[in-house]
Amino acid sequence: MPFLPSLLLNLGHALDHLFLLIFATAVSAIAQDFGVAGWEDMMPYTVGAFMMFGFASIPAGRMGDMWGRRQMMLVFFFGMGLSAIGVSLTQTPLQMGIALTVLGVFSAIYHPVGIPMLVQKAKKPGFTIGVNGLAGNLGIALAALSTGFLVAWQGWRMAFIVPGLVSIACGFVFAWSAPQEGGAPAKKKSNSVQLPKNVAWRTFAVMVATATTTSVLFNITTNGNAQLLAERLDGLVNDPARLGMLLAAIYAVASLAQLVVGRLLDWFPVKPLFFCVLVLQIVAFGVASQTSGWLWYVAAIGYMVMVFGAIPFSDTMVVRYIDDAMRSRVSGTRIAISFGFSSIAVYMLGPVVKVAGFTQLMMALTCVAALGALIVLFLPNEAEMNAHLQSGSGKSL
Image 1: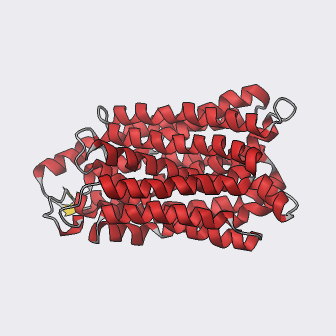
Image 2 (image 1 turned 180 degrees about the horizontal axis):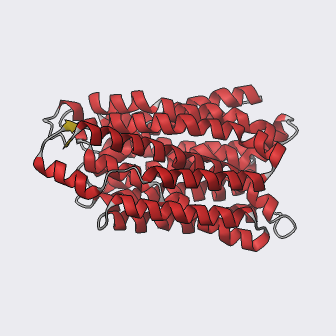
């Protein structure tokens, strides 16, 4: 993959996460503009975006394999840009919910299409996934930073318009620079990886289950951190721009975890490394649930490091055990299931915080992290899977 298209694929990951979190960062300003009593009452309107981010991944992945990944990435860049501008034109909460749902449809394209396109010829897939994850999480940091400043400068609508124009510009550059594909991935000669049927399905089940717990933690923290930060630093920092900078700093530091984990995945087996990351998640969420002020801020960096650090594992398993001809479809299925469940958590974020508060929410996230660690123990040992792969017998995952 030439440098410029690779750069744009990584930038696309940043934009994907940025767009999904503009609303969560600007929700207080949006609620005030729409005459809604509190930000908690606006949060359910974003559930459509996250549901589509999951469910639309299945057709997006299928189209990526059957039609072509280059074409689908063009749909992604232009569709995200135009739909974000559409969000900026809404006047009521219902219109906002509909527009965000459309945005979610286009956002679903990236993960099952962009990542397989990026790693299809990578010599060090773990590190490539780590760099891509870093880019995506820097998009989260940029969402906190840019949205805070754009809201203060020109209002929440500009926070959608500016990145929308950037996405459209990226689409034009990608169309010019990305080489034509030699055919859709599914139509190329297959070198399908083989695993015994029971090992294949067990691996897939663990992949989906851990992706679900990871997605719940990711979506709850990235959608709730802005308001949680304001609550835990109340009386210490109250300026929206400074809060945005502090939140961006958390994400920027935590993003480096994906580079480290990606590199480690090229050297070490998945199972013990994944388990260690999830155990550290339990500790970090437990500490954060019982603290406030600057001590909480340090704990927040810790739990976001572990949340981001857990992300590369599912993509790495897809690269190691799924043939390129069907990676987009498998990734789309995994994302649809995991984000389908986690979108319910996003829907409940505002109502739960309104009733129980952030402390109880953080304790619940500790339990989710513990569940994820338990599930990883059922992942087949890598030595066992490699032995089957080398023997070339079994059933394709």
